[in-house]
Length: 408
Image (cartoon, rainbow, N blue to C red; front, side, top):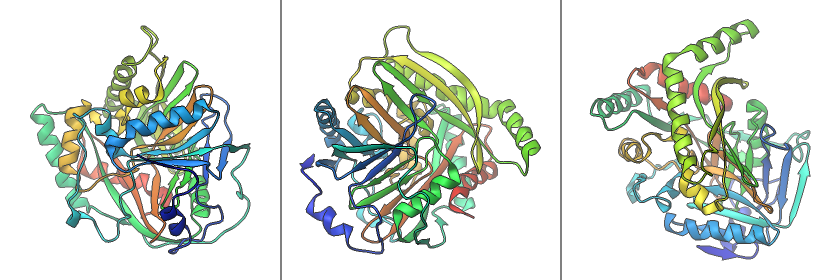
């Protein structure tokens, strides 16, 4: 693990290079706090007093211990943990390990396994800075990495593994890629306006920019109370309010979507049970349909009481069950075989840790990763594949989740 005071020289060099023109300086993190689990609003973190970077999964536990030590000293830590950090917490959790010749030319360089900045200059805000100002950004057309035909073939292979008894559900994903020019903060604000997410986050490490408009709460910790809010079940929005109500009712009544959601809730209960006080795990809300500008999402809420420190929470919960499938270890092995490249920050976690045993992390969906040096941008989409899934419907769901980008 690398730890330094201020930004690294490589990050500083990247800050002034390439197609990005920043209105916020490198090292800035801005996070939206989930109002459904506690006080909401935005948290603006500027000028880190130090940063910690885990280039490999093996370094992530030490990084999380450093995060805990820094917050114990009164600092705020903000950053991300990438999906490929999973083996740090359990060697049975497989991830895709690419060969050097597998990296697509249009893809951003793979981000580190984790990055956090440590802040003393932290300001709560009712709105994100510059929300009322216009700034220029431009993205090339977004292009999916899998065609509908290739995606259908992958869905068929998932069903073969379900028939063999290797898994019950696989979260199968693909990427969309573009190049961004201009101000990444302005791009994030546009993404946030289109999604209106309660767990959004903007992270600029200098080398990597993360623009996350995630609506899904991985966990929020306040003392001993921990809240998780997994999402499973998606429908496009309707043409009007009446159509919305019809689609929401159909989503809530779908045996397939309900089964997927309940399966993930059971996994979250099991994961929380590894660190929770005995008898404290509670499903507070089941199968609620939430409305977002482009999609309807079915969401459940699971809570518990825990005294576990941050590294143990990640070891028990990461990655979120909603982005793997069930059971987690064998299904992640299937994902590593079927998906042709790493996920990076997508389906990892982005968030912050505050003094006094407070923390919030999202599930990094509806999230764009931008390489600062080149402007290469990547956005992941996916869905849970079960036995009665149809390839056409699953691909259409991916496109619905990409509508926030203006795609297709």
